[in-house]
Image: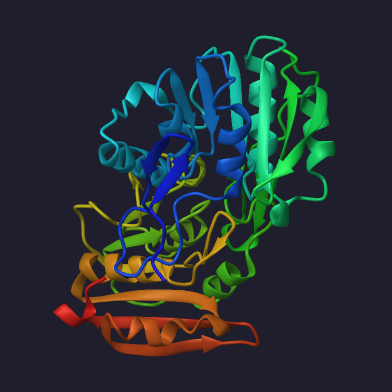
Length: 378
């Protein structure tokens, strides 16, 4: 069965793919929430329009003109740009907004509800405070992903909230910006990390928003010992692994890499607070794709979700990036849930894979001696 790449919209058809391309892509680049929003609003909206959390550009490219995009995800920007080329459209940097950028004044907002409700709260707080009072904000979500508290959250920020009829196994609602907020934003939050003797800052939507992730905690208990001059915290989140490595190896150069803008902003804020005057590198992108450095040690707690999509193969790309970035005697340390089976996946890319520690839930793996052959290409 082939994954669909053409989204039919009445007389129009747009081509959408998930980038970077994979040989056997299992998931299409839009869902019922995208179709719902387009069906409900495409013929009726008044530009300019702001589209929020458009993962692959489906909504923005369907309307094409007078549209701005607002997202935390580097991959979302990359997918929008690549899919624009497939549809012979322009994707201009001036249309893009990162989470902490100022918002454009628009006449309407389409918001696809993200998995992380902290990010949703942050976005609604910004929208209702910065847009003109009365600006309509439309939200859409898949029925199977409906958060129980969604309506109550939206009513904290928007006026005149009204539920809309469902279609495509999705639903929506509309509310209106107030033009002012009575309460300060609850973000960023703080996470206590005893090992660092510090509370780390976490911007809205960053992994482990409110407390230290137990997988990361397990790796912190078993940080590798060695002569590591260049260390990468890959998929860094708040940067806790890289910060702990910097503490243990004061002469090492540390790089923090993540595809989330808010993760990189969090890691940089935490670095500046804990190591003022010491330089570090911050790489916003898809894993280490395009990164020009190399590393003696890479620390990784790999994701297995892309928003709501569960995809254990997301780690494969990160393993391949690590293989390419490591020095000949470098090491990749991975902590993961045991059921994910990453030990076998790592053996596709490395000749030596060892279990360094294990508990009831997690396994800590060390991969070394990178393989480079046609059989291990992603």
